[in-house]
Image (cartoon, rainbow, N blue to C red; front, side, top):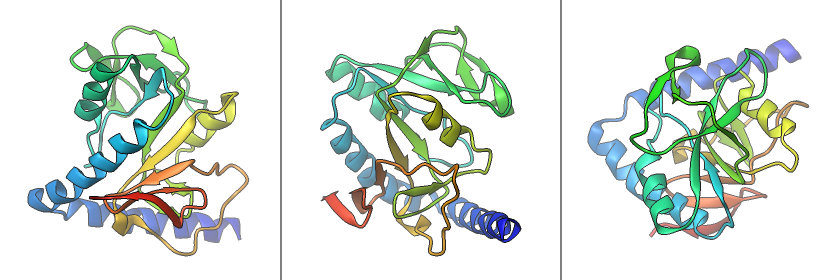
Length: 199
């Protein structure tokens, strides 16, 4: 059964990544605008001092400019995730837009200077999702990070509406998101309940 679940997740991941890569620039822009508006709307309802974001790869949505603009309007700091040890939980290091970075794990940029912080809220890109469960790239880093942090930060999964999947079987290591944001809605647990929609 476990092998079947792993194979199913791999197939879904590959299919959704292919679909994401086929989006034209115009299509991406049309989907990104309402998605970022929904994410900004949700973030402004949360009490946060430190927001964990991410450096976009594989045509993920770039939230850095939006997060930086939000941090200028309210007292909060930003942080990027860093793999400090393979297979371990991530650390979040304080970082601001335009500050220097260096190549990290998988050559993903990380802050040049190590300054660990504990985010109140973290945003993670998703490949797919069902209800409040996120399908990522399969490394398990984000789930390990949520499990390791007490109290757990408010976790937001961000992705396209077409990334909804059916047939996801949650495993013991899978940790549900507190919210899923797409271009169509902001969904909280249970994810079928949209608390906001764009416009």
